[in-house]
Image (cartoon, rainbow, N blue to C red; front, side):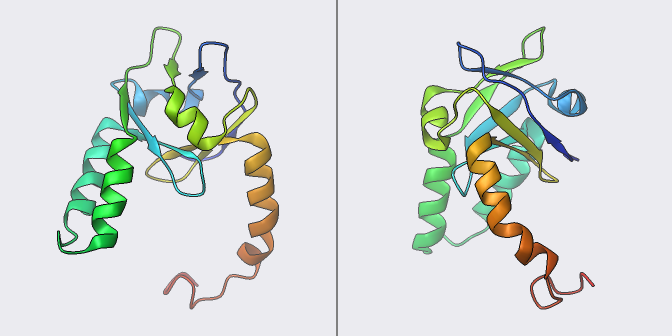
Length: 143
């Protein structure tokens, strides 16, 4: 499970050092793809396959499902961490998420997310109050 908030830097070659807490789960390979809210999703190979299988359950006749699957998969890139635990973020994903040098990597349960730090801070500031005021109807059975 991916948890926590980390602040790595993007190097001049577009690489990121994976947070130490994520390395065991990602050692055999990662899949990077477009995330919602203009971040990059980071899945373990197994996690990506599970996510893909869930998406495939949607009917082929659903335009929204087809659109989502196309964008999700067309941006995907399988990577293997190097000996220094670095992963290259492809240029198209860096551009999509507006990634510069300062990054924020968050654990989001079944995946990690890579955010430009300014974008993450803005998102967090906007959503924190709603999070604090979450009621049962938002996530049934949570409280």
